[in-house]
Image (cartoon, rainbow, N blue to C red):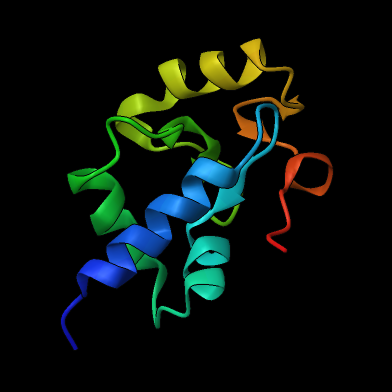
Length: 98
């Protein structure tokens, strides 16, 4: 099933709603948007997230995108996000969508 414009806008709204110092995983966003797979969120983030707080979206284990890891972790640390080595402490930083 193709990704609709409504799906893209819903993912964008969810990412925009993540407050500073908090994070969500691709899976969290997929579940909140009603998408079948976190990969769809990854695709949307790769193609349409320049104006969003992209750095607040992580893998399921709390790790950043490998090609952006240093920048992503620096931005999160600047926001006061709790880090545990090269990952975010998801127990403390995970944002739960309403």
